[in-house]
Length: 241
Ligand SMILES: [Zn+2]
Image (cartoon, rainbow, N blue to C red; front, side, top):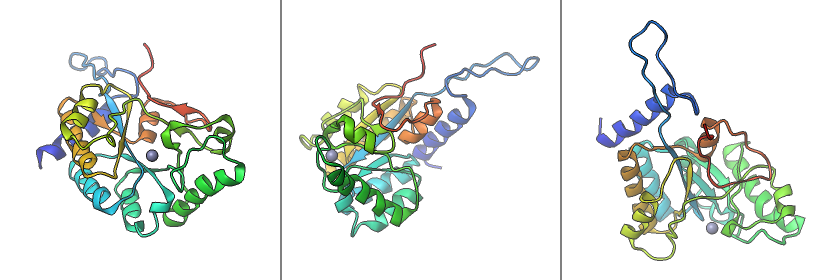
């Protein structure tokens, strides 16, 4: 087994052993009580794809490390990339909606909203079947009306390395690894080779620091947070003790 796979396996074991938010102790009468805390969790998320030249190698790297991520797809990029989208789902990644044409959702009419979000949901349902296709609004902007129409939680982020700004992989990696804390939702874009390479370095660095990677949906489930339609989520930390 490779060291990368071993790190991912240890993560899964730690998650299985730890109840969400609660230390677990050995049964009375057994050996000295051992406290197992839940490992720190982070969710890596990718917007604006799919793009075969970058999303493909990213999926290869995530598969090698057995790390799940969450992809918020632009609907207009799905035709021609159906195999990539099926592969995401088959490999355990979460898939969400980032509008059809990457437009700002603020101020849209109901008809325009449905063309952007409903049309993308219909594409995903046709490809993958019924599912929870959560929404990430482009630029993180949404208004009250659109919140009411989206029918699921709105996933924002708590760590933004601005990976679109330049292709400086060292800068992007540091901007994430130096800031990542338990419960963070990390924003990246699978449109650029630099982002894809930085993301895999981030995975290796955070696994080495004891973090576990989960999808946004898994992060909420691990923390006992029930997703509410129309509500914004930026970070899902452990509840205060
Ligand atoms: Zn975007």
